[in-house]
Amino acid sequence: MSFDECQDLVNTYIEWFKQKIRVEDIEGVCEITTPFLDRHNDHLQIYVKRTGDTLILTDDGYTIRDLELSGFDIGTEKRIRLLRSILNGFGVRLQGDEIIVEARTKNFPKKKHNIIQAMLAVNDLFVMAKPIVASVFKEDVEEYLRLHGIRFTPSVKFTGKSGFDQSFDFVIPASQKRPERVIKAINRPVRQSISNLIFLWTDTKDVRPEESTAYGVLNDSEQTVSPDIESALQQYGIKPLPWSKREEYVEELVE
Image 1 (tube, rainbow, N blue to C red):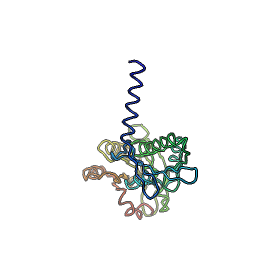
Image 2 (tube, helix red, strand yellow):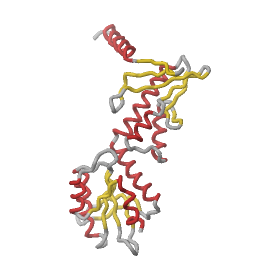
Image 3 (cartoon, helix red, strand yellow):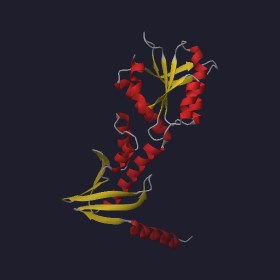
Image 4 (cartoon, rainbow, N blue to C red):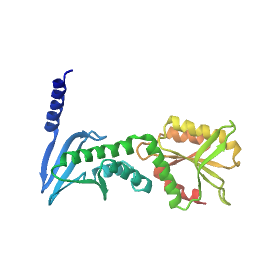
């Protein structure tokens, strides 16, 4: 392929991009609808307003609100740090719930590109990067335990009958009223993750105190947990704890 052919392809892309951008004036604020799509296949929009010589570009809070409406809370310290590190990489910042950047006319194209890329990156990281989401769900469970004054030890390993170390997320020590409680946070309560928990507990329970109880905390924020999942856990002596019903379990965990 020749250089001229390559240049023609670039020019074709630029022309397509220009045709796909829509601009609307809303009471002195410029609404720009871009060809870029979010996870709902909706076009990303940014808003531009002028203050003196400065242009303020913002997503009007859409990115953060969308995640929160999907049941994903950005409010913990760890998540805010992670969010800010992403935004800093694109030279934009968080102001309230808005992703925002300031520009001048000369560097507006670059700043516009940066804020769009930041919006896409936040969406990808928090919604599509499963290991990070799983880690954050575990953090949610820990925050829930702390909020209610529930005593626990995090990240505990027990050597099972197999001789292998089995890891659990939290252990609540026995009290005068309750036996030891062992907790595993399950971000995606599907057959594979439930089978893993059943194996962990089956291998471990005989080396723990006789009345020790295992809990599977099931993240049902984004998907409904099948009754078969809960039934399978119960068959092996594991208590299912749906995240949406967590407040109902405070008493038996705090005692």
